[in-house]
Amino acid sequence: MKRFANANWQGTGKEGKGLLTTQSAVLNATPYSYHTRFEEGEGTNPEELIAAAHAGCFTMKLSFNIDAAGFTAANIDTRCIITLEDGTISKSHLTIKAKVPGITPEQFEELVCDAEKICPVSKLLNTSISHEAHLIIE
Image 1 (cartoon, rainbow, N blue to C red):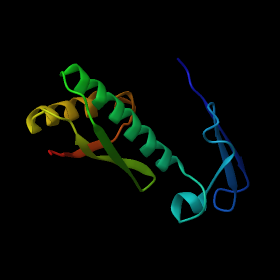
Image 2 (cartoon, one colour; image 1 turned 90 degrees about the vertical axis):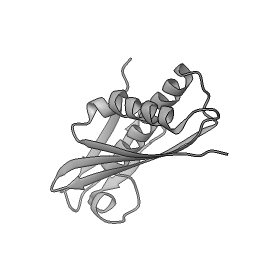
Image 3 (cartoon, rainbow, N blue to C red; image 1 turned 120 degrees about the horizontal axis):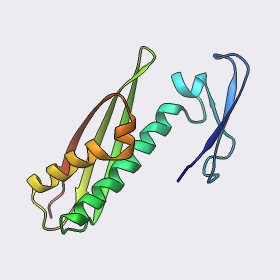
């Protein structure tokens, strides 16, 4: 399987602007710029897209882990915060909140740690990855 995205940039690094389009067209000429990356401009940025990719990939892998352990997740919410420092993506932090009927906190933490290590996006990122996991018990 191969997926693609296209980036187009016009102008200088600081005053220029770009457009991102994905194969699925979920992003279709979506603007990005210096202002969307380093300030609060309208549009997206690479770090936000990496955060979405990591959160999505990790959450899907965690769901597969939970299934394999004999449980079914009622809900999993994951937030990923990507830190850009000194021109380097230095951290990816995952915060997970999940409802998984019947699972113990210890079992859940083990499955979270496994998903963090082996989801494909975690493997791709050459950075510090951390997490905090919250099992919601009703």
